[in-house]
Length: 274
Image (cartoon, rainbow, N blue to C red; front, side):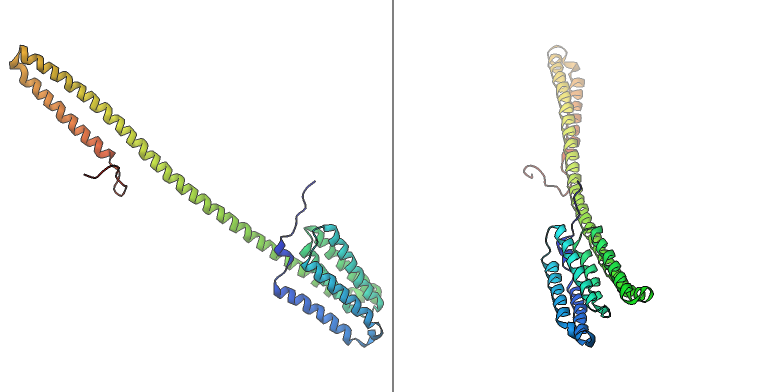
């Protein structure tokens, strides 16, 4: 069974200006109820219905239960309250505006398509009750305005949610890219350091091999010079010249390789400075 998407905690509480607009519209309904002379005998009943609606609306807005089933029960009770209020005096159709607020709240606290099911239910109840009370054509004409508002408000809320969700994903991706960039920078520095170490090791091996071979040649030439000194002293000079050449070449090779082993300018040199 797939997991059901849930609105984020912040999405359950709209911004203050939207909340103020919701309660301002509710206040307009209450004032319209108080000002309507035709429903004066039914005023206690209407105020009771509107008070119960406000209490449940506020509790659901700020203390939303975790179970989705309880939310559906809440919307069913609220819808019955509004339609029941309309049934008390069908000419007082202004009370159906409460279904608009209910549609907005449905998208606010119900996940995914469930909220839009109640938006469609609110629109259908508005159209049906008005068509019954005023006739098909006149009732439908009266229903179009609240039905439109009941769809536009939830659509606006859904769009704002998608924008906020997109911005949150973008910020998350940006943070991941920054972290990846820092990691790549560290890896590049490590790779550069490793490459330098490998190059120095290669030069050190080359220095070792070259010097070892040259010293071995110098050792052979020195032994040959000792033999010539005892047997043929007159041929010692060329041998000494060759020995001198080998020593000079060995010294130059050592200087060249040691110079390449020195750290680049700006790096800390290893060992004491001369």
